[in-house]
Image (cartoon, rainbow, N blue to C red):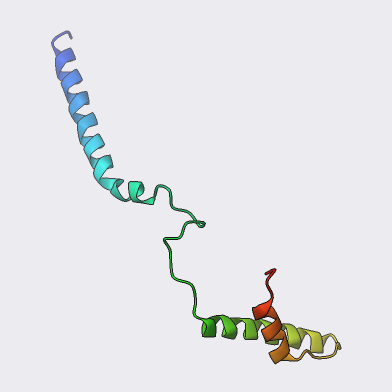
Length: 90
């Protein structure tokens, strides 16, 4: 029984070394992501003005269609798009 102790210790140490190396290579990209979140500035570029205008227009047109379906007076879509694009408070 005492003869097996050094063999078991060496085998466990070798297995732990193999697992450590495998984890080190497997987690290589993890360190690249440290410090990155939604509030950092290293992600995609902002949309162009035309894309933003088209998205706001689609939103306003959908809201206008819901207003009309409820029986409310329709909005001036162009004026509402301009108001939403120039509004400073979000």
